[in-house]
Amino acid sequence: MAEKILEIKGLKKYFPLPNGQVVKAVDGVDLELYAGETLGLVGESGSGKSTIAYVLVGMYEATDGDIIFKGDNIAKTGLHRTLKQRGDIQIVFQDPGSSLNPRRTIEQSIMVPLEIHTSLSKQEAKKQVRKLLEEVGLPSEVAEGYPRTLGGGERQLVSVARALATNPSFMILDEPTSALDVSVQAKVINKLIDLQKEFRLSYLFITHDLSLMRNVADRVAILYLGRLCELASTADFFQKPLHPYTQMLLSSVPVATTEEEKMKPVKVLSTGEIPSPVNVPPGCAFHLRCRHKKPICLREQPTRREIFPGHYVWCHLFEQKESPGSGK
Amino acid sequence: MKAKTVDATTTPIETTSTRQAELLKRSWLKFSESKVSIIGLVIVSVFLLLALGGKYLVPYPEHIGSYVDFANAGLPPSSKHFFGTDLMGRDVFSRIVGSFRNTLMMGVVVLSIAAPVGFMVGVTAGYNKGTFIDTALMRVTDMFLAVPPLVLALAIASVLEPNLTNSMLAVTAMWWPWYARLSYGVTSSLRSENYIIYAELVGAKLPHIIFKEILPNCLSAVLTKMTLDMGYVIIIAATISYAGLGEQAPRPALGSMIASGVKYMPAQWWLTVFPSITIMLIVLGFNLLGDGISSMLGAEEI
Figure (cartoon, rainbow over the protein chains, first blue to last red):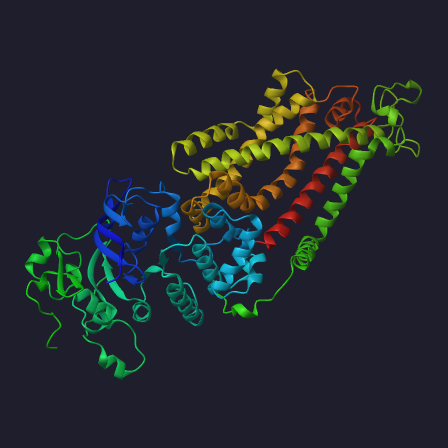
């Protein structure tokens, strides 16, 4: 496989509350990311997926664990990173309404990273802004306008152009299309796929939309209450889901026809709600909603097990290699 | 925010100059939507004109200073003296217009100090929301706000030597906390906006974040408040000079003219009534203008 650019080991991020309780937003996550791949990070709201993004990008310091990015541990740097690291890891936020300053032109917004990360003159930088806009498929004339003159999809593309300005190798896409109309979503996604090939970018694609993952991701990781459940290549993930939570998620994806419904690998009814990250159940975080729970699930946290090559699962049911859904 | 399904390639292409002209036209339409804001604009324009060129426009420019003509003292309004004459024989109209320059200077100086100072305090506190800096700065601000503003201004003005400079100082001291509050509110809500977070992540320096990212978003609120406040500052300034703590005789000030005329009510009513109406008109003018500006700037925020 390709070169490993990012390795997350035992990442924890806790937020203390004023009343003494602790929100365990991320509670021991292990992941790695290879150059040029798209890793999909999927979870319900409250599962900690955005927290992981914010720790990676330096908004938060990790409570514990390591993030090795190109040989440097950046888990506890917070905002005190080198300029190179800041430029190398870029983020596109979810809300297109808030990611661009409404009082500054598109050009002014994209100039910010250019002024900090390149030594271009003002004239060269202005040219570069237009080049970047064309790179993401927008006419260079939008540079002079304000964000309010653009639609949501166009604003997201401007955010992508701004992120590309620092010439990053790793881009975090925090639900980049979830606020967009479906028709615009496809356009933005296709552009992101093109750009990935062109600039050899690695993506951490955060979403709650599983069907999107099928088209975009090379590998998919499932997050539940700050812990990983399953990590597999996209093909394995959709054809041979192992973790009871993954099975539940996949069978709840709506499909158009009964044929498609029959093609779903396993059918499990969704039960229960995600508990609060303030009050994570002991043992396996998922046991409250799991149909297959065993006594050990209430006591011990499951550890990572490689069931098939590259297909990891965090579940006590897999001490012997068998799927809980097999034979049904 | 609702995403529009506009294809990128069909975005209307405009040049900068036509867009600015368009913006100006739209702003004027918004401003003139309410006819009273035009009245405000007219009043304020006349005030500004008289304040800057009053000396050359009034019938008796020498009456603005120390001038005595007891032969014509205490005359009622006539075609020769529109607003009558005071007990020293000076033309009241000329003296009212003559006081405009200091009235304007008061407002401009007070606001051009109070607004930036308040903005810096508010932005610093709002940007560091939740930290010690926030608590310290905003508690000091609250202390100033807790004292009734007029009392504080009168106290400061009476401790210092009574003159125009010191009354400006007094009014400024009580005025900045309102701008601190305003900028604090805007900044602490902007704090969580992704474009501010992005600027931090990418490594932008603090001055960039404050002056390029936050300031443009505070500007419409601050400018609107400045226009509205102009009227209030003029009232406070008149009150201070009414108490005898502002501009000293023989130089004219609206407050002190009312104060000295009030003893001769109702016989020589013109000594009190005309300066009072003038204050009222100026304050009204700035308020109406402020409303117009706020609806104009508010419209841009969509």
